[in-house]
Length: 170
Figure (spheres, helix red, strand yellow):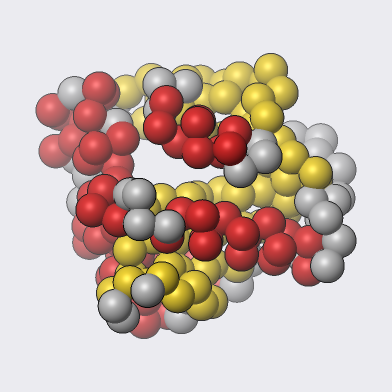
């Protein structure tokens, strides 16, 4: 059974493992060198810092007590974004959890929490070649709005598309 709860600092290692496991499948097209550069310890340190700083909100989905997915939310980081826009900064599930309902449970919590945080619009950025995620987001009510951006990360160019959706008030 999938259970969603607010993440604690102690979840940092599990979130780091899920993050890297998801990336290794999602970003496989970026090549072996990129995949080899993904490091669980580095991601764990990042997530412990994020969970400690408190500038965002993170939730985890558990299956049988094990963290299998997570989402991180905050105000939009886009230049010039209105204060009413919240962002799904990270939304990842371990590949073995795909199709279990963890993503749906987590997305419902994310949209509800964005509303509780006072946002009326949500955005997220997704890799243009991540068809699986894009279809999931579209089924969850998100729509590509035409905005695109490129980032170079670890020597690989990542092309992302922005999705948006209205956020209902709580």
